[in-house]
Amino acid sequence: MSYVIGTIINLLVSTSYAMTPLTLTAVGEITSERAGVVNIGLEGMISVSALVSVAVATQTLNPWLGLLAGVGVGALIGLIHGLISAYGKGAQIISGVGINIFALGFVPYMIIALWGVAGYKQVPEAGRIPRVAGLVSPVFILCVLVAIATHYVLFRTSLGLKIRALGEEPQAADTLGIHVERLQLIAAVYGGALAGLAGAFMSLDWLGTITKEIAAGRGFISLALVVFSNWKPSLALLGGALFGSSWALTEWLKVLPGVKGVVPVTIINTLPYVVTLGAVAGVIGRARPPRKSGVPYLRE
Image (cartoon, rainbow, N blue to C red):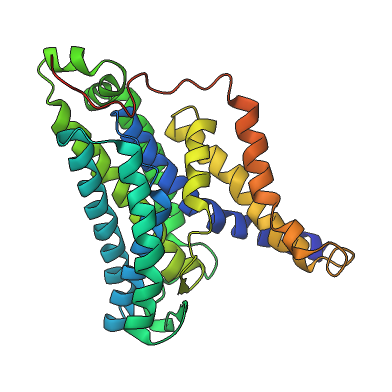
């Protein structure tokens, strides 16, 4: 019985860690897309923010400064993407692809340049975020609060109504005196900040390392989570738990007697992605994205 209880607790804790970066990134992207700005560069934002947070935390031995640095870098990239999308009326998909390509070269190069190692750097213990009661991450608690608060703002406040109007009818919103570009920029920065927080969490808390492939597809899974949640932060929280639990289950299966050594690890590692594909396929017909999301607003 104690083994079963211990296993359940470990799976729940693992799920809380696995779901946190997915949920944070998805909630930020939901806000951005509700305002009409699509960002598919989440993978790159997570990686770059993770790198910068480790660099700051390693230098200062202060995990909170590292966390803030990661959030700041994510917000900065979101700002650049927002300026291109909202004010520059640029192609949002191309801008997002550019972020991902930049990260593919920048992160491995900087790991070598900063620490003289190829693709991997361990975070010193003093630079890692302490856990609550030795189990729960404070960032997980923040993640839950952020998802709930964001849902409330989007669907229960006048600010949220304005943001949602930008993704549906920006011309009508402009006619009513809403500053379309400015609010889109703010939403893009908010989305970038949460992606940055996700990257900092992964490197300073969950994994305790920075690698050149630290995102490992989580940016793209977060995009799938946006669709799964039908652009609602509260459902993103539940969906994050579903996707996170599949990751926790994957790690448990790798060491489970009867599975370990029998089923190839490469096959087990596909489980989270299979769950993602299945979940999105199940809702793809019912999901309704904001009508003007991804479409630059041009005044007539």
